[in-house]
Length: 223
Image (cartoon, rainbow, N blue to C red; front, side):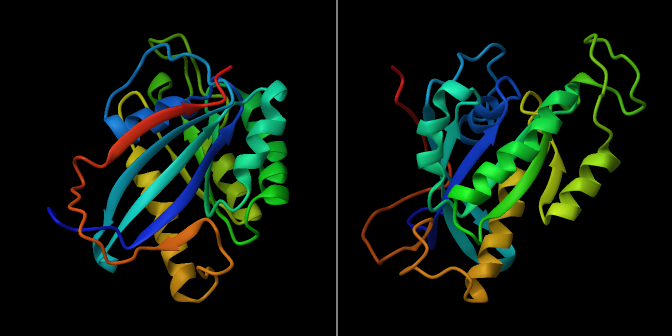
């Protein structure tokens, strides 16, 4: 893939309660690693990644804003919702409260982000529980059945996937699934450069980029 530039830049936000693994999902996407006890996000953190959507012959640069899950940072994080084309709405499958609170996060996103935003509901931490909902070796058990979350996602018009930032299961797939939906909307004229700040098409340039080297992380508002 050497020498190829991206076709689109898409703005993503990652939202949900504290400690559901939002930062871990971003680190897994951009760095392909897992941090056992990451520092809490203070405000917003940023990461970027090039992904290749082969069936559409598109290379897309994802600009991802990982938002804090505490009320004290809500006014800051809301400002990053504006113009977002994609959203990962994350909950912890072993903590029902985080799933219940996803309704509030979704309402907040829909109020402040692009009205055509693609949102994917992500049930994180499936590595902590077994399929039969019994207590696993980690001492955790599933509190949110897959079927219940999938049904709610369908009712709200959301995409859905369960994932594990620790193992990497379905992490990139979650971003790719949302990206495919956004690309479909672009093809149908739902998103346009002149009125969709979260979607930008690339311009010809001489930059040489590769999928392997196109990752970065940073922080914002860590005060």
